[in-house]
Image 1 (spheres, protein in one colour):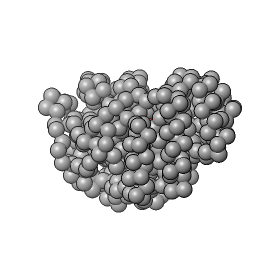
Image 2 (tube, protein in one colour):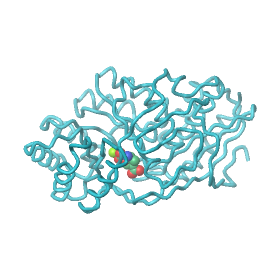
Image 3 (cartoon, rainbow, N blue to C red):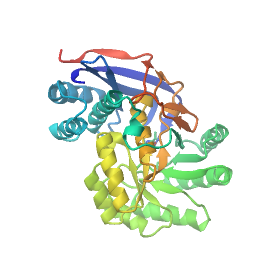
Image 4 (spheres, rainbow, N blue to C red):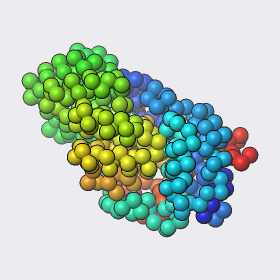
Length: 370
Ligand SMILES: C[C@H](N)C(=O)N[C@@H](CCC(=O)O)C(=O)O
Ligand SMILES: [Mg+2]
């Protein structure tokens, strides 16, 4: 099965409630969808989110790098040579990880279709059902408590609470949420780089002294502050997780060699796709470190590959933050991974199993070859 063309489309889904972090606020999931055509009539689907504040990637940038640099090298390649195709994608340009993630995902989808098996089975096999946490956006305490209440009533038993825009208020937010919901759900925090190392130690030691047991705290400090992460990890009992600090296998090795963090958050938009996400999961296994699989604010196509990987690497990936699709008002994708409240169900159809996508806005000048 040979690659014959690459097309692009946009897919937009309004959110139930605005998504607010210490870095940004958005009201829509807006993904770039990448469609790979083949000589056998099969189409591979991939998608990527534009999160320039974290990855530096935009839809226009992704289209340009794929259309003018990556697509010309991919046309004519055989899907059965998956590793070669991933090597071409990874080595033709540096950075541009979201574009690489979308392309790789469409190639993995076709690989599953070629061998007539769902992706998670080809990746090693695992359970067809998973559970995700849900994100509670940073907001006024009353709104955050109301969002936690809704989430717990929907069956979520892990709350990922966004904080990081005001240290004192953050401490009050965590205390209020812990007191209201720790009997019903585990509480993990995501500071999205909003504190510095000393503030983090102050806040976590204070919370620990009040017997607040957090499951973990994600990316408290700036992405390049590895020393800060180590300083924190040495001084608190709460497990510390790297997110924006951990894009590449090399960064993950550095973080784990330095004992700077306890847990790594793997996201395909940071790694540049499934091939590097698999490499990172394997590296963490060597260090006996745990992993979370996470996502950006992405829809169900983009998150699908991460869900298949989480199933196949369940021994290593022990925490799941794949709630992007659950935050949308609806899912325009049929037949792929189903996201219903905390439950994620993988399709038994080949590849990602996508049968229909409603509301795709095709990008006319985005076909290669033209
Ligand atoms: C959506 C997911 N739960 C999440 O919080 N992901 C990111 C932020 C993504 C974004 O801004 O799009 C994270 O920091 O973990
Ligand atoms: Mg994070």
